[in-house]
Image (tube, rainbow, N blue to C red):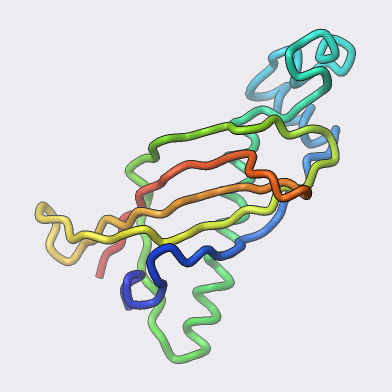
Length: 155
């Protein structure tokens, strides 16, 4: 089945949650984004954030982890219902990445995805390019991250 046959345009689905513990924030930032407001609690107090906060790239990586876990579960669910899950390939990219609010220690971000559109690729018969809206909301219901992604789908 195609994504466009399974999911309604605009329908938002929660895909999982991630807790940004101090340990997780520090581990990621030390390896990938060692800016002072991500790796040093004391130094972070003197920045515009006022406290240690997660790298924006960490929030994107956590979305991806949640999406992959969700998709594995979704493929099993569809198969158990006798439906052939869509065959998704890689993403050729994303647009409009917005880090709307900082994510601080011990915040839980709940991630979601919404199907936006699908179009056939003229260069590859049988392939579609799907657009999805990806978001993360903190425990107070505030959207902290949003981006649009493209996902290839093939027969």
